[in-house]
Image 1 (cartoon, rainbow, N blue to C red):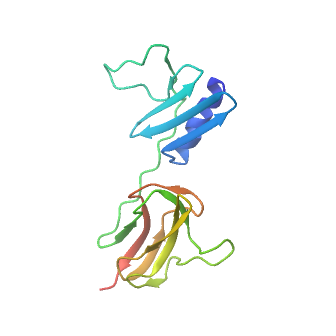
Image 2: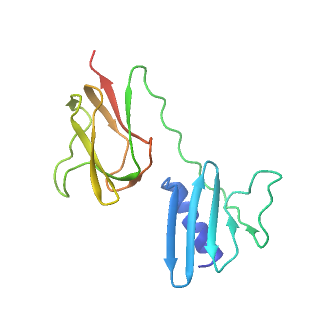
Length: 164
């Protein structure tokens, strides 16, 4: 894997907001783990590359080469939540599914009314399907997750306008 491929991979992971990624191709193993604004790529059998320079005073390890992406786009800021809206957050890391099976209608969609305990989605983690239930009654305003995509612990999944 060359430097250009690594740069493209890092930019893709930033664009898709993926926090951790691992790739093994032959004798080359690449593991990328994002922490805040810094992205560090560990690559066995090759030098280490920094996508964003480390904090001042914390120089790269011996054998490291800096790699700064050309104007990497910053992830868009989430819209400011309206007063009184409730955010349903993911209790686990996994893969988000909006329906019980491929081709089935989603559990909920914007405009639907939900009750406490009603299933909103499924998060697959370690081959287990975990039903995520609403913790408030109200109207689904927006679905913030993408079907089939990885999600993080604490990530906002749904916006609900609670019943008054």
